[in-house]
Image (tube, rainbow, N blue to C red):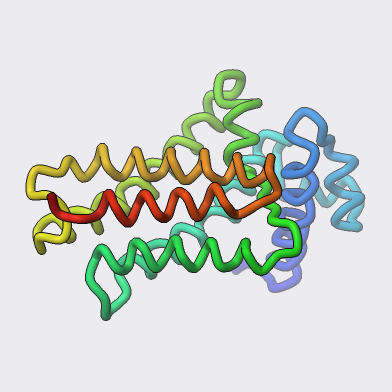
Length: 198
């Protein structure tokens, strides 16, 4: 059985180290920077992680598993139609960024994809698996919307989900560059128009 101390220290290294890697990138982050951020000796790192690559893989899971579960819950929430649940999810995210003095978004999965997807197949596969699960969740909700007549009957829900996901990531990038939520609002305005039966 895993002890609470072991679990807490493991989670601490993951949380603090991931923050460093998100800011500095995979290549700009060494084990020393990770353990300094967590306030633990280097030996503790190697007690929990076989390598920096292993750390990145575990950090991806630790960061994105809760996000995927929140996404699943939002898209399957009782009350509201499928279309309303999708739009409500993105409205809530935009409201979160709007409350920030200067909207900031650091995408761990995007950073790792850019740096490591080709160089490290295990990281590339994990990134793809996370993105595929997100796509599957959205496509499932879109399929419910299609069946209920909220979107066009001939909609390809998988392709539509992929387009929405790609458009959202692009809007986040534009927000990061501009320091404004305007690209996110533009995304939402267009999404509302897209998710109307023709």
